Length: 147
Image: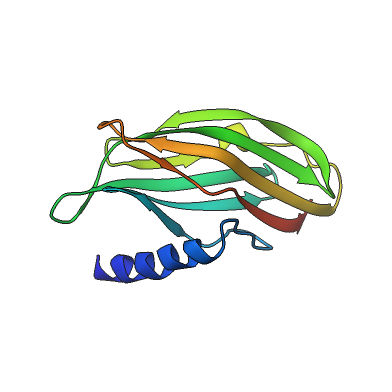
């Protein structure tokens, strides 16, 4: 738990420096985004192979005397591009499990259109907590040569 808290402080401060995150290959860094007493620890990935897809994994937490996992829901928009040409896009919405964990990937599945530079971007994403608190994510993307 302490390892996560130290990582979260470092990643949270990196967020203040750069509002958009990009990483080539596989997954981006795990980022902690906070607002008031709510926190979302999240990561974007872009996978190719038999079932190419983007994924957004997250853990929602609220601060009491210490951070506690809590259920939440998320909605936003996504885009998948190949060499800057749009491959797939649209809105998304999902609800976490009771422990605040959400792993979205099936809605970000796409058809490979040959080898190239693919990007997976999430924008306008907001996590909503049972207390009606909300945590907006900064625009983020991951990129990789795939297919």
